Image 1: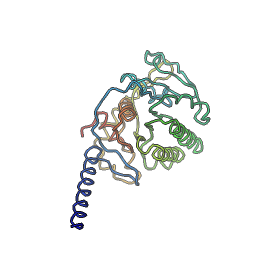
Image 2: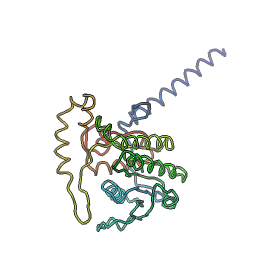
Image 3: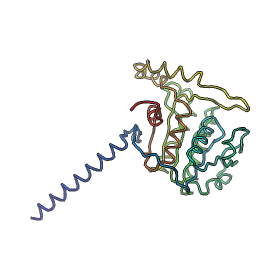
Image 4: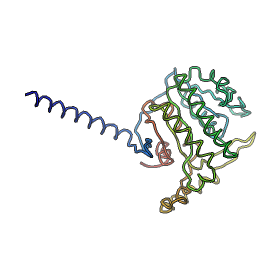
Length: 283
């Protein structure tokens, strides 16, 4: 009799485990890359942000950051931004609705106050230079921000990283090593609320002083061309160069969604996932 009871209990546990796993697969459909979860697709419910939520955008005065600030404001979310220069000279109505902070990510004491009351962070911090400089900007600065956010009890952290480009990774070793180091730190500190976006070439309209530069003139045609080069994507070193470009508005939309949607699965979202989440690519 005791043997039968144990068998029934085992079957019950197996059924429960199978159901929970199937439920997870239906909701996230994720895979892994080198042991790290890679988010392919998820079905989430769009709900207005809670009044108690507050978003901090690191580098909100830059190309991607400014679009993220606007996207979050359009969703009715309180938005703050942190950068070395503080308030930018952007003469647009949305800029006056952002709380601008000045701080240096290499000196945590200069920006910890900016994290007060923040529930989610999106980092757009990155840059180029020598390998040492690139590692410091893309890696160390973001790792400092991730650690400070974790200590402050921030719920979700979204990091705008970069897609692998094969041979380019070798030419810009400091850039990619820094990015990957920050990714590792994020998934360690935010195992349940860390999301990494890996877009390739980001195009759109960039504000440079009082001028608006239409980067879409380059990006849009490339997006069409890459749709017909899928066989080349499997060629080692060369293949990753054909990663399709993505509009900055799509990146901003997915970043804000990942930062505010409590059921958005943690992990890595590649360019194809970004296009799906933003509605620019059919599932």
